Amino acid sequence: MKNQKPHRKFFPVFPVAIVLALLSLALVLLPSPLRSVEANSTYFDLSTGNLTLNLTSGTTNLITSNDNWTAVSSVEGYCGDGLTSTFGVDPQTVLTAEFPSSALPSSSDTCIAANKGNPSAYNAGGLAEFDSGTYLAFGFQGNVQSRAPYMVFYVNTTGRSNIRIAFDVTDIDGGSNNAVSQFAVQYRVGESGNFTNLPAGYIADATDPNVAGRVTSVNILLPPAINNQPQVQIRIITTDAAAPDGTSSPDEWLGVNNLRIGNFGTTAASVSVSGRVLTPGGRGIARASITMWDDQGNARNSISNPFGFYSFDDVPAGRTYIFTIASRRYIFNQPSQVLNVDNAYDSLNFFTSSK
Image (cartoon, rainbow, N blue to C red; front, side, top):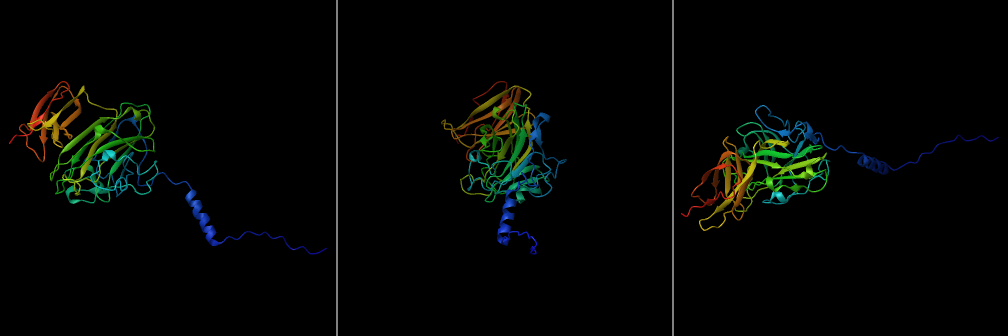
């Protein structure tokens, strides 16, 4: 009997390059996390109460480090680098999403500068937490690097209806910048597709030139489409602004604070107050700024359209209001008017001086 050679097992030998390529493919196919550790996209259950975002002297340092939103429930901010490519774009028309789902955007990480003070001395753009100084707010400022800064709020409206969003937009920049600072509110149901603009949330210009302090309050009812939905995203957004003459200009900082999303409203019946801004000859004046002050010192702002029309909706009836007007080009023969609002009023008109 012949001696048998021991049985040997042979394993195929692959070139090193092929092995490395296979390993790389395996890593790509592994499931990736939905969010980086710097983000917070948990959907807030509105059946437990209202989602709020407030910066006060007792809630400073919510943003502990740059671009880190983990301490802020159900909200993220982004610089909007790729949403538009130029300045002076109406944010109401910027409806695409940087990210198609709840996955981290491929071209833009979360964005915010932490623990800033004087907005007039800080011009980096994007988003910033101003948690010291005169104005406490989450700041928005567009520029070449941050064409459309925005914040997204994640809410679960299951079992809920009549959802509102309310917040204040404050001109927090008293420096030399002078821009037409627009602001918009948008929403989408689910985590794909474009956002839908909400015209009632639009602010044509939330700033005054070279002076801070103007407050524009937004309080709007969200559409029935968001009712009883497990995933709703609400976006507030600005864009890289233009100067009043339409040229490129350094943006002013807009500050957002006192935000809430949920079931709330006015305690009294609400009506609308509207009118026109006119020359003595009856021609409409565009872009005049009308401010409505209530008896507690709260202010809301409206900008006249190209035909001079303006309006305030959801005005609580049974109260007295002061309406003032300002324009960069005109003076008015009666720049302030007092109105007792019991019912809807549609003829609160302002006329420019004939001089």
